[in-house]
Amino acid sequence: MKLPYAVTVNDEKGTEELAIKFAKELQNGQVIILNGNLGSGKTFFIKKVMKHFGINYVNSPSFAIVNEYESKIKAYHFDFYRLMNMDELFDIGWQDYLNDADAVIFIEWGELINEALPKERLEIFITILEGTMRKFEFIKYE
Image (tube, rainbow, N blue to C red; front, side, top):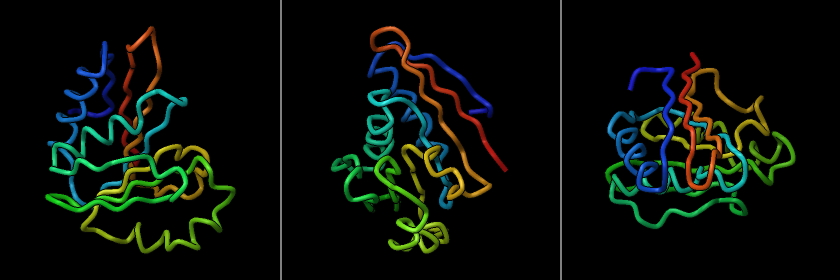
């Protein structure tokens, strides 16, 4: 997938196919930010990426702030939606998570605490179009 990259998918099957394509290019140490309105498919996309690696118990960490997964891949799944400030992230060891070069980090609602995001990251913007159609835009920041 050459970045920046944009694609429109028609339904959940299209999102799943895109997630599998994306999963095949993931590398340890990557930080992936998913931005989009409520119901746009951020968690669904992550679920399908994780399923590719044999992880089938993915759910939104809205209340837990972070979920940890490990199988063929080690991943941390954050949700910034309910966070009030950076202090809450530091309280759970944010820097330790960021420094784990053996893991992939997914962050939903990353734009809510933009100052917490590392300079090097991949952002995925998901836009709800008509019905089940979604536009995915992938942008790499270095």
